[in-house]
Image (cartoon, rainbow, N blue to C red; front, side):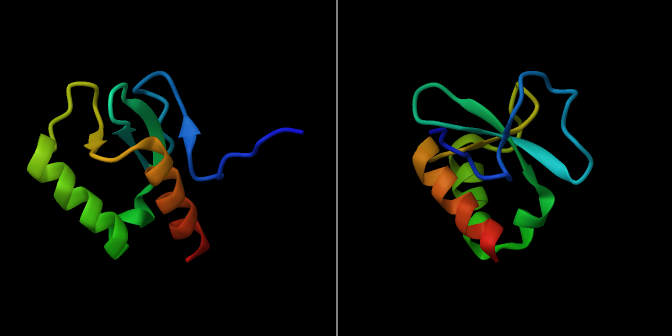
Length: 86
């Protein structure tokens, strides 16, 4: 039996493969993993809270071309799964 990840999280390896209407974020405590998520999340209060924390901790200028989110990958997957249901 396979484990399905939420549709909203698309792992990718290069900065040029972000589809229109999405943006790249880096998530994880030690090793950052890149995820591509819909820009519609920007209007969600839960995601805005994460962005505020990201700005305080890292700023918005990431050397790899995306925003670094200061939370564990599990927490991020849980949050994005909930946002996908809204």
